[in-house]
Image 1 (tube, rainbow, N blue to C red):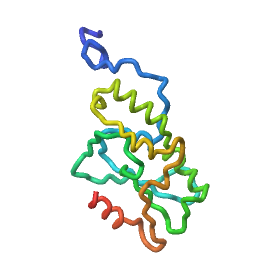
Image 2: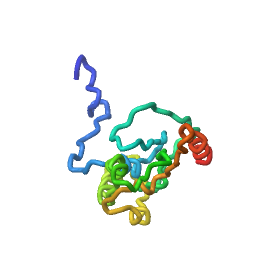
Image 3: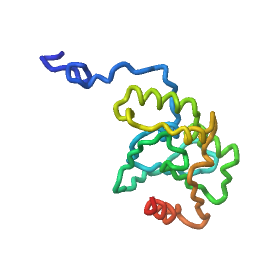
Length: 171
């Protein structure tokens, strides 16, 4: 305590996060999205040549609802991710796949470990249902880029804004 005030994160003010289990495996970006309970944004990535970094602008889409998920994990095709792909590219090309393999890697065992830990230790996860059917559809350890919604851009037009808008209005 400092001057009679408790530390910000302490048992004195009931916001002590407790011990963090450092033995939990690190999650990829897609694995995190498979086990998260609430979505407040959509992720859109643009495929660019053979580069390994992203530059440009951040676009935020206003959505009128937040999705709360009670059955986990989600499948990659059910997550709000869109890849904007140039018409001249081939996502099966190893040079393109390297752009996304780290972000879109899915490991079933890691997801099971995290869901079990969260269900036992996090109050927001106490009442979730762990779907055995969804777990069986996830790869043991693999790339799920081919399961992400991909919109092909035309060579003579700006980014496929109409395609993205149509997808957003149908969600």
